Length: 239
Image 1 (tube, helix red, strand yellow):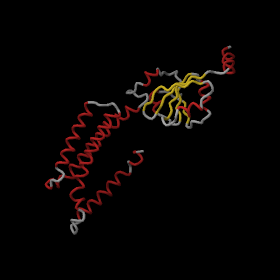
Image 2 (tube, helix red, strand yellow):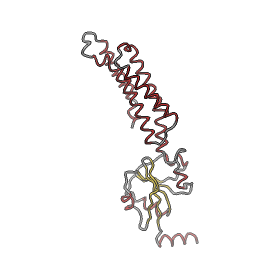
Image 3 (cartoon, one colour):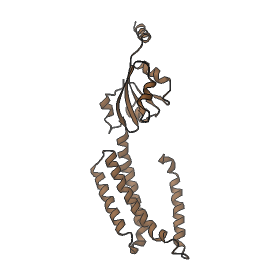
Image 4 (spheres, helix red, strand yellow):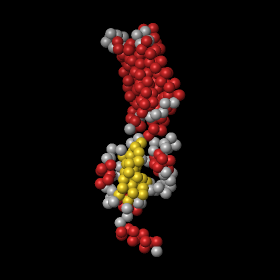
């Protein structure tokens, strides 16, 4: 996960910075490190601008979140990319090359943190405010829900419920017991699990209906017909 690598980023930046400082301060062999002296800052600026354009296009295509702000970011990065390519060979910009690279990197970080990540999160969430899933399925507090293989911790969080069952493995025998106790429920399953594999783990006479796929999850509605013994137990309890 990116958060696991984040603590190493400052140390890596210091190592790269120290190396570049050493190379740029070495005047004995200026031709040996010509790329680092002349092209490294310019290449970093152009690459960051190209990445900015790519991120915006990705979000527009794959998240259906084409807002005015995104279009503004797209225009900004396109203009910066063209400018960086035009000025790349300009020797008079050497003094400000690293400064412009730092500014562009800062803008890229701001866009990713405040626009890209929230947009991606909105496109992937199951029951967050931006998701229509809860309304489409008619989910309420009485709807039995279980998650399989993937915990989907956002489900109990956004539904504000502590009774969401979770089964870490598809072959967990608790799945059948859960379905027998809840004759009509919703299963939230990791998308890599095929419906045939899931069907093999259901009780006999169970009906499974795919509802929708969103993000890393596939949702199914499962109806289980109770057997004669279960009906007798329910009647005994009602008496």
